[in-house]
Image 1 (cartoon, rainbow, N blue to C red):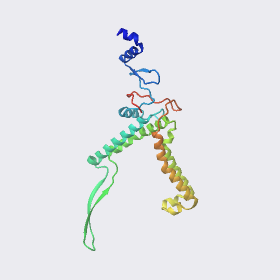
Image 2: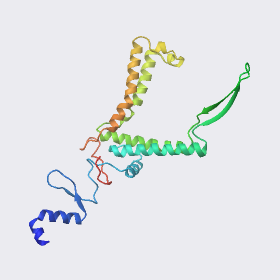
Image 3: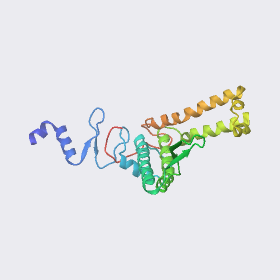
Image 4: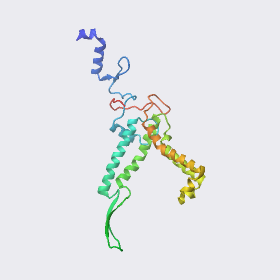
Length: 239
């Protein structure tokens, strides 16, 4: 063993490092070694599902800083799954989510009897409603930080809402709110104002897709105006 260490000192040093709890950072060129107890480097890694949920709840009101893609989208998946489960529980055990009632109709002229099913929709059940209210702020704050990670202001997350308000106000000023209230579509779409309305509706349709595109973009690997790349203590898995 002593002879091997003398012939290959670099390999001997690497083995000692692994034995002391250090692992290869896979750096370019010569190996880069880091302590596995330290937080994993941010660039090229992603956050696990449990870590993402814990982080987003811990940063409930944190609208500053940055959030990587895995942190945000794992949290969105958590919201969808839990919300769906609670909706099913409400509909099954608490009477929320909708109603279904059979009915029978008799035609007085012919005496023919017909049956049908009336499907009605109620408000969401209590569990799904409470969960939805609790999730509003962390979903907004995590999306805000996700925009920061791409180098954009968090206000870009509200782009569809801003466009919708702007389209409504501009159309009302050009055409008149009374036309909207009366449902006079021909008056709304007439002339140059109609072309402006069509263009505004196209922008309104595209704006959510644009926000989705921004939320799916990779984070900037370097420091930006909103801080350094987000750190993570979850395992080193390619992002």
